Image 1 (cartoon, helix red, strand yellow):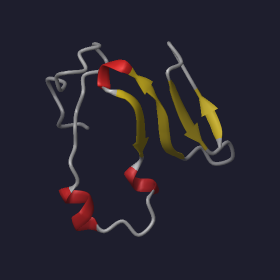
Image 2 (cartoon, one colour):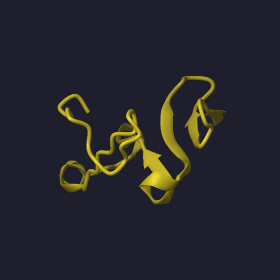
Image 3 (tube, one colour):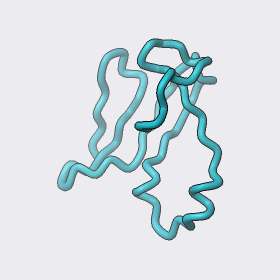
Length: 77
């Protein structure tokens, strides 16, 4: 796994340096509660479709540093 960081370098975006697949990220952002892990759902083996459909989703507007509110548009996400 290779690690990519940008801007304030609070997140570690991990990816395969051979094929480029991004499987997950981790880091610390105070505004969203501290430590976080984000998983690319497409990277999960044996993920049940029903389980994925029913999984909770929380949108946060990190682009505008408005972490308490979802973005105005989420249809593309």
